[in-house]
Image (cartoon, rainbow over all chains, first blue to last red):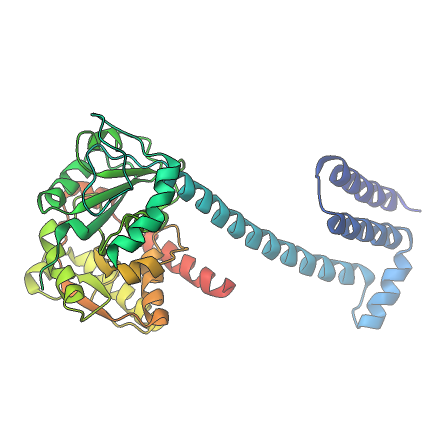
Amino acid sequence: MRPIQYLLAALVLAGMLVYFARLRSRLADRLIVLLLGAAGLVLVAFPELANRLAEFAGVWRGADLVVYVALLGLAWICLVLLSRLRELDARLTELARAIALLTPHFPHRPTQHTPEALPQQRGGEEQLQGSQQAAAGHGGAQSAS
Amino acid sequence: MTVDPAGVFVVVPAYNEGPAVRAAVEPLLKRGYQVVVVDDGSTDATWQALDGLPVYRLRHPINLGQGAALQTGTEFAVRQGASYVVHFDADGQHQADDVPGLLAPLAAGAADVALGSRFLRPEHARMVPRGRRWLLRCGILFHGLLTGLWLSDAHNGLRAMTRQAAAALRLRENRQAHASEILLWIRRGGWRWVESPTAVRYHAYARKKGQSAVNALVIGIDLLWRRLWK
């Protein structure tokens, strides 16, 4: 084996080690990482295999094939991560909104349009309780019809 | 048909609008409207600036963006039994005197959503700086192509809607692109819309806080990105 093969194999193993040691993940993700790591090690150990696969796929060299596949894989990972980010963002928004809706402030006695939504005035600033706000969700809808 | 102002909930999203928000909501209170200020995680004294005023105050624990604040305020207004929901900027650009004009077609049953426009009256259009006018024309074209709604104005934050429309609103664009998202929502939901003349004051504070050409580009990218993912 050539020095570069040792280096590549060490990098693949180190990557897998970090993944399993640091990132808690789903079983399916772990299987994918195991398979990818194993494939990487096999290709490092037997470069001829990559060349044969490349020839079969109509690509000049095995290294080119690996680069093409890796680029596609990276693009796919980016898209998955971006969609997860948007999903996370939407959930964060929902959470922040729920907190805001549970803790409204109103300093004065409610009007006829806020029948059971607000507590009796005790003077000064009041914070509405979550349960009262939840009741307002139903009462309010009825009062407007 | 007259509108009972106590049933009109004006939602005012505010992010670091401490110096302006009080002056922006006072004229609304004078007209008897219910005011819902959504403090979008401000780091200045926006919250305290409203002390003593009879306004509902809600606060996002973190800054989410104007679209998210409008959605929060709209949901709150609907829960409180609003007959009409109005969206109104906190920086003092919008005029409380324009709100009755927005509500009139809704009360008459002629429309579900009324959108403010700076370009229906020449005296309002003249108030828009020249550079801004070109930017808005591009926005109008962009919206027309994207949504099929050909309006006379773009990204005018002043709008009013009936309770039914407000209850159906689900803004997912947390940031500025919500204005375009609302147009898409109008078209897809088949809501009847109308434009109503509104004046926008471009005073120094509002210009400092307002949208730049770079923001317009960001909004466009946000929208295209959203379409890509749908």
